Amino acid sequence: MPLKKLYESTYQWVNERAGLDDILDFLHKKEVPICNRSIWYYFGGISMFLFLVQVITGILLLMYYRPGPDSSYESLQLIVSKVHFGWLVRDIHSWSANLMILCVFIHMFSVFFMKSYRKPREMTWITGMILLSLALGFGFSGYLLPWNELAFFATKVGTDMAVPDLHLKDMMESYRSMLATERIRHVIFGHIGNNHLHVNMIPSNYDELLRAKKLYLSFAKRAVDMGGSVSAEHGIGKLKKEFLTIQYGEEAIGEMRAVKNALDPGHLLNPGDVL
Image (tube, rainbow, N blue to C red; front, side):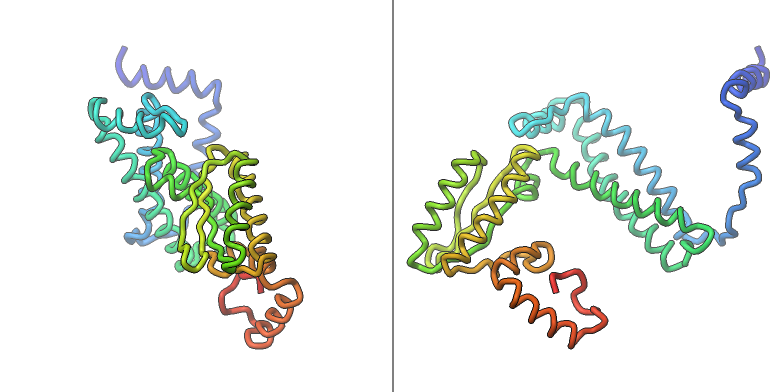
């Protein structure tokens, strides 16, 4: 059968079941904005191409990858050292992930600065922002899968609190007893000279992560009750809004907020913090 007749018969068979004519008719009448085809025009397509690379290489890696805190790293070593071209597939997957995030951000900024989000393309902008959030979520989750040193420290829940000399022993006992009760893997280190300790909890699943965060708050309240401080916590007042309240109380936070509103009524400085 000639190739043209084979194509026509195949198309007709699919068209009768899927209605391809209606789809093609819609696409032919779809109006596309006039574009001068500058370099910014292509980053959406590049992002899509890199996403397809992610899917293909991810499926190949999935054939040998074994999830779990005790097997992830070993399976990764097997892939890069024993599987034929495993190292190449893994590197392509890793680099394409980074490049995809970069291209997605460039695409987002180009759409924003060129004002391509305006009517009637608001829904395109909204769905694009949702896809950006999903891409960042997938990027972070993929970052953790090798369960190597970088992934280990990216997922830990770590404290950064200090207590007076008199209460260092009591605080250590609180750490150990509460951690033993929750049975979460952890390591404690820090600056003993100024009683500034770091409790790093390593959750092995989502349930342990939630319990570790609750413990974090309990530690903060305990340290403040002993006359200590949580002010060294990274992100206090913004990423960790409740910690600043634990440290100073609602009344003091209200006074700080009043000063902030008086000096910065438009909330231009450090937006999103507890004030």
